[in-house]
Image: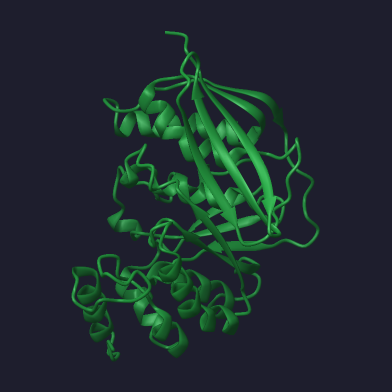
Length: 315
């Protein structure tokens, strides 16, 4: 069966904000899948823009379909190499679900011109892992060890449903005091990537998160993704790990899976010393209000117990 999956990216601007749309279409089939990304600013775009992130976002879908993927655009050589390795990993982890496919881009570029001033952006949800990572690289690690963190990216459409405008605005309001205190700019992306449910979220969340971060390759050199598990308790297969996350980028910038040297309780032992971080912390994903903690679900209770374990007030 030689039917290819075709991927193209369209860019538009309205109200001084960029919107990118990934369009996936199979040869000979009129139905298409559209994944949009709406930003809170204008993100640079040209015919030569590297679209690594858009490819990562749908890689597992294409592998699940077993369809070779034609990329109508530019991809970096680093991304091509990393996609090769990512495919090998997922085919070993889930051989009955994923098949190795060929990636056929229009253009492959070696790498981008390096920025003179190095900058990092961190994925940010307001949870334990992401708050620990932003504190670690702004307040804790020595200057010559930490990454030069300038911005935090909050994604609308993952923890907060993409149609829940009010909840997301309240979440931004909740997080702002900490980001202001750490002098980090807030970037936001709104996407229907998760809502489409074309992939298994447990497998694809790292790729879908990194897809959003890859949209910022013209502005940043490094990306930090807070760890889910510590080194001695790593979970495989899982969508975001120290094994796979560094592979979800190209030649243009580098993804660092951060914090696996610490357990959740050890991270909370650090967070407890920063009052603003404690106030904004948001761990709940089962309450009705997607911008706050319900205080009753398993995750809320587990987090309270961790605060108690490190001798801190859980409220």
